[in-house]
Amino acid sequence: MIQSFFAPIHKDGWKFIGAFALGALILWSMSTFIGCLAFVLTAWCAYFFRDPTRVTPSRSGLIIAPADGIVQAITQAPLPKELEGGGALYTRVSIFLNVFDVHINRVPLDGTIQKIIYNKGLFFNASLDKASEHNERQTVVVKDDSGLEITFVQIAGLIARRIRCDITEGQTVKAGERYGLIRFGSRMDIYLPEDIAPLVSVGQRMIGGETVMADLNSKEPAREGVIR
Image (cartoon, rainbow, N blue to C red; front, side, top):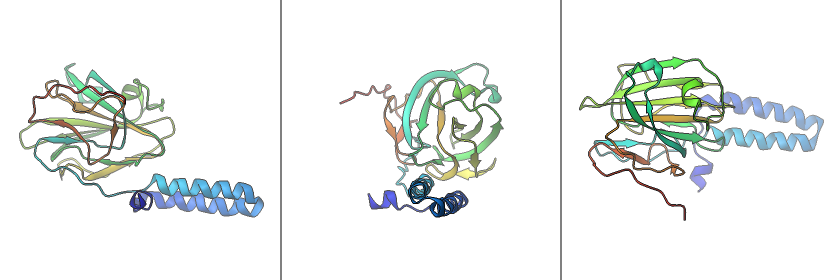
């Protein structure tokens, strides 16, 4: 519990925390009450940019959650249009990140980065299905040693206005490795081949870098979740 609240801060967050703190000091000089509220917002900003360590399952073939958040939808959908996937359908698992989730994004699969494509777009609420198609996004394709390609997408949301991606094409990556972040509420989509069933359910909470979303070596059917 202590570690989750006092995790290291991502380097991209310090300028925002500094700006929030400076604003809080100025407001404090004018009004103690408003200043206290501003310091609460500063604490939230520091909490938002936390970067906790994670324990990633390392067995070959596992696809790991690329982000914290709730599985918003599991649907059949074509790849993002920038990839020109020919209309073939994939199982798209969408993870919605609210403003209290960890926003550090992680690589879902061991392999080599094949493509990184940035698309300008709109800023619909990231929980809406149309966000996958119309919102600003960064699409990444990774290929594993067997030649299988997995696509995962950072999607900006209603409040988010900045996608950061710190990997490059041709780079070798490991599952669970940090690769970027999205600021202030967002969505992550991951596209699984149609014959690979997700091992997660709608409404289930993901822990980026830890939760196993699918197993390329398993023929287990898709799981159903029950609220208890």
